[in-house]
Length: 117
Image (tube, rainbow, N blue to C red; front, side, top):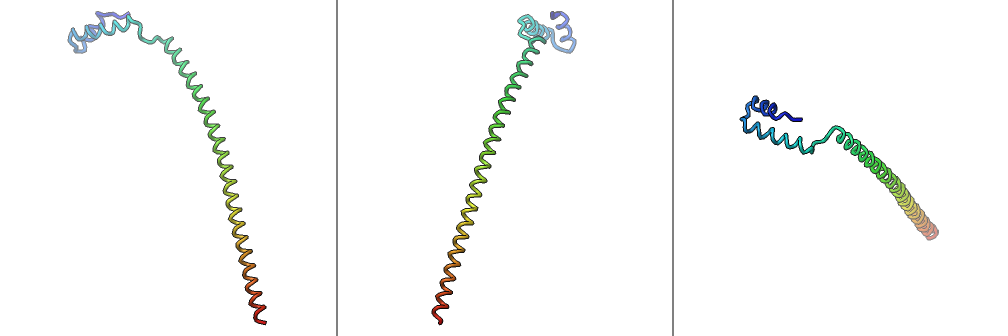
């Protein structure tokens, strides 16, 4: 329990005026009597609840991170397939163009060779 006289004396010894010390002591006494303060047991219970909630948040975040990683892996696979498709298409176009150009050159050469005889 709060010793009002001792608390007031301690405050006045530090240089506070007696009416200031009495007011501070009165406010502290009211807080003690109301019981709004947290007891060590209530603190431990609250801390345990907080740890449980942090554990739950950690589990949810771990699950969400795993889902994001799976989405990234899926996107990487799709991107690689798309790039390979584009490269193969470009290679096909280049090869087709090269063949067509080669055939055109051969025809021109055959025409030139046939026309000069």
